[in-house]
Image 1 (cartoon, rainbow, N blue to C red):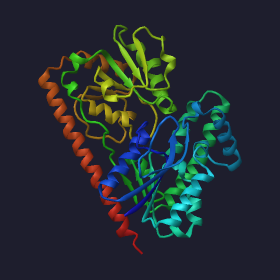
Image 2 (cartoon, helix red, strand yellow):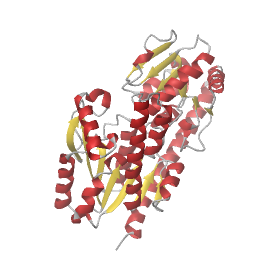
Image 3 (tube, rainbow, N blue to C red):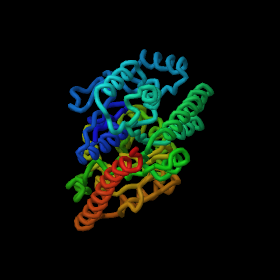
Image 4 (cartoon, rainbow, N blue to C red):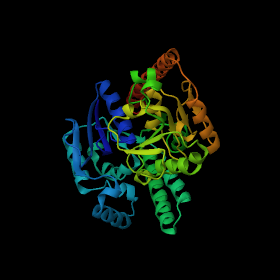
Length: 398
């Protein structure tokens, strides 16, 4: 099958959770011998792309790095009445590339990855060449719900207006996408339930981890350099709210002799703020960072979809304390993964796990259990992708 995969950022470098999720789908499709052409923007700081990737343009993606471009995006957002998060990826060049590909090739399936690319449906509707292509919408989250959560937590009236406008506009796009697509692929049952109202071919995929347990985790108490490890992309507001909740509400309940290391871009405000906290910034190897911790904390309080960092934490083989939000879309998880919602409970559970003196035999069994869980999840994911594509061909054959 010939597949055109339209996304925001070319995902093969796997720089963020969203990119990891997208690339996981692409690799699953390629594993079934489908020919996948990927169109998207390239991060400005990254070099070559894969042979099946087509670069629309090289640019900074995050708003805080974009400076003048961010002002232009906001202006275009108002002029075109599009969500700001979608305007960032809208361009005549993107439309031109897709039009050219559709004229040159006959694609069996077109995948629209992220609601932020939803504006491309206008082009597909106008372009009669693509009328026989099946459309799949991959919804990483129910986007408008994320912006509503940020609207509720915003302090200033301007911020409230911006987030409420974003929620209203992105909701219209994702609802239209879900209604017009042949299938909607989601990452959690709750997201699938929402889109089912618009499309009864809404499918849940249990995204697998991108890592496997490190051998160092077998003797993690020997290799551990600090007590609690926290990692995430803090430039994303939903993640940042969780980190701030941890330090505002959980941290005061923790003994001050515990060492805490935080990794990931966007939390520079932590530098020098607490005597027992070290901010590590971006770390090139997530597993290497986690292997240095005794316990991993995942303090998410809002968000949608499945958190890649939670799956990677499970793959680390280490004990984990996570909020219910952090474990959304993840069920029947292995042992030594504790759920805590209230700040004092979260702190107590961290201290309790730190006090558990795990022997090498216990750690070895823990790793085996995690490996089996990860393998089963990976196999189920691949089976579901194969089944969804096959059903697409059967159900919608004219």
